[in-house]
Length: 354
Image 1 (cartoon, helix red, strand yellow):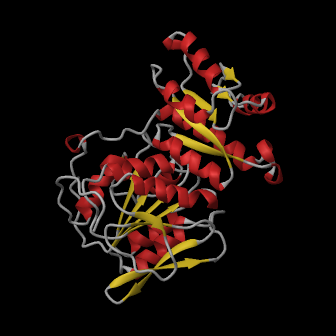
Image 2 (cartoon, rainbow, N blue to C red):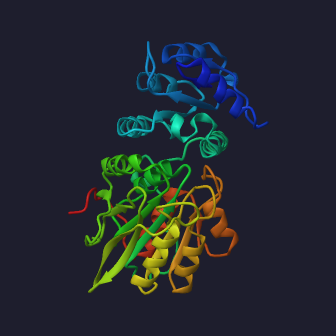
Image 3 (tube, helix red, strand yellow):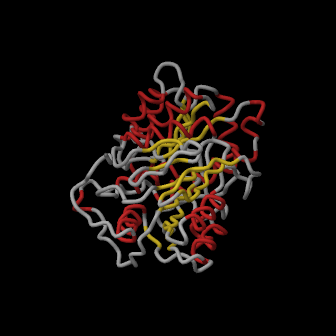
């Protein structure tokens, strides 16, 4: 289902989506109220699996329509479309907290608009992926969390996490699968527009599992905290006495990305002497593969998201096919493995670290 106040945009998106023979656009709406009404009139068996929902519309905007759409059974996967602005990023993250599974930043005319190849690839990948996996299951209670796997306890000094397409939902599920903060710093590289990174950090911080923020050059990396690579800069780690400090780099893009997962993981493998756990989540391409080779070669551990829960099994699939992953699990299972690998014992949820 397409919901956008512009008929031109609806038509362009319909052509884009139906260029994939596996996708069929069954409903179109010009505002939220029309979308809610159209969906309610359909028999449950005929309702769309995925809704692409614009956030800024007259009559009823996307944020107002979102909870009404999510009440339908079967519950659809709602992907919100937002402007590529700071305000658009904030609204998109608010939509994720309200139940949307993902977001798509609308490209402006200067970037090629809806004809931009990167935008087209992202839309198709997210619609196909969310139709396949539905929603990433988030445990409702500590008792529902996966039991810690039997993984070696290596005395880890850091955890490095890489993600791309579908990553914000996977990261949220991973954090919500933790019953306490890991006793090491967590470094995350997520491929997304620069304006969205700060909003993602705030979104993850509000989950309450552990403090999350964009990394700052030269700051000490503290246990039980998550540091996101800022927009358009690689996040690296450097040893400093018994601990680690963050370094931000303007080095060229790797795997067509900056920030890129590979330089982050390579730096962790060196700075931690191999005492590092690499976790690769859903995403297109193979960013993280070379970094995981470095981690494994230094004696560290590598884990990856399983295919069934991944929106796109590109990045984790590359690591799995290379024989580097010592565990393939959905985000909640990976959370338990992270704690086990660091020697942390499970117990009542701890919330933010002191």
